[in-house]
Amino acid sequence: MFLETTPNTYNYMVAGYVISFLTMGIYVASLYIRARNLRQDEQILEELQKSDPKS
Amino acid sequence: MQSKPIALTVLDIVSVIVLGISTYLALVFAPTEAVMGDVQRVFYFHIGTAWTGLLGFIIASIAGIAYLVSKDMKWDRFGVAAVEVSTVFFFLTIVLGSIWARPAWNTWWTWDPRLTTAAITELIYVAYFMLRQGLDDPEKRARFGAVYTLLGGPSAILTFLVIRLFRSIHPVLTNAAEKAQETMGMTGNMKVAFFFALFAFTVIFIDLIWHRVRLGSLQEKVEQLKLNASS
Image (cartoon, rainbow over all chains, first blue to last red; front, side, top):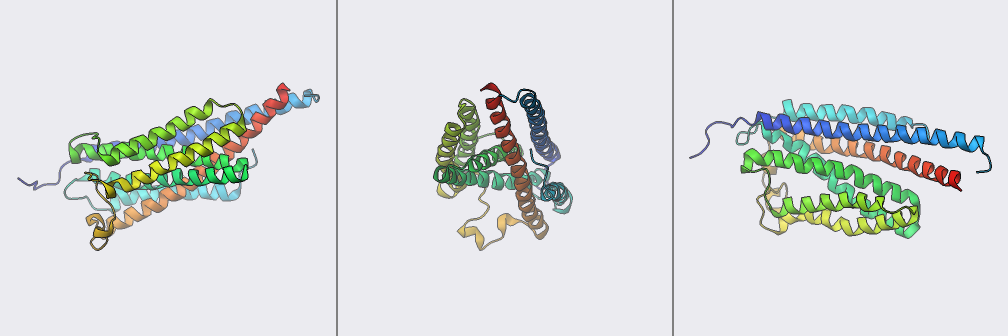
């Protein structure tokens, strides 16, 4: 017997797009956080080098 | 880290805009598919992420060759960036495919040749990061990464080709037999959403790789500063 009406798969579509945006958002946030932490490390290390020019 | 180039800021803005347009085209502009219903709309992002994911793995292999030939660390940074962004996108491809499969095939997962090779490819590149982290020497790490991506590249190519070589329940988007017919039975508006999604994810992919390469440069600089501080 063939389907005569289009099945309701709306929830699956919503789940797909929510996961897509969530995953991309988390990845972009991870790039931002890692860059921010590295910049802080860079600043501290450069200050250390300035205060101790021998190293 | 060097100050952010204007071109990258422009690319960030363009990426957000094209992602918005692509979402609009997929959710509103494209008509509802008669047999599968709304879930078919995940297909646009599924294909967009799959295209960029597999492309990135192949680009990483090429970057691996370039590193082995030149020993220039910029190729290692580029390869890592390509693998990382592709792993995220390919993860999305698998998840979206699974969401589509539940109403279409009545199962979240099946060990079909395409799904199996896709899962193996993703795991190969997840392992890439785990193994890289175990190596402290930057040159050894870069050499290992280059050889690994070179060996991993064929798995990406196989994932693309497998539904054309073996019997699979996964739909084939284009092959010689279908070229003469309509592309997967898509209507005009569906094709617009489909090709725009391919374009949008390519732009986003380039944008993210650029950011990841810059992050790699900063990582390298901090590593060098740490070495100087400890010596």
